[in-house]
Image (cartoon, rainbow, N blue to C red; front, top):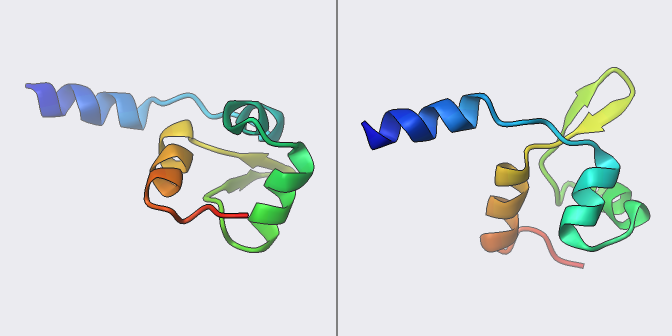
Length: 68
């Protein structure tokens, strides 16, 4: 039953934008753009906007995939 709750949360997780993820990570929006360009950050594109899932970004950070 607990795994169903986790699955539900992952599938319905709120998408955040570039400024939200910059604030979440306490870095500038330019840093986020640089990480996107260098492939250091998981993102999705919705038209011209970048969208992120905080859980994916946090996982990359925990795994050491995001570095300066």
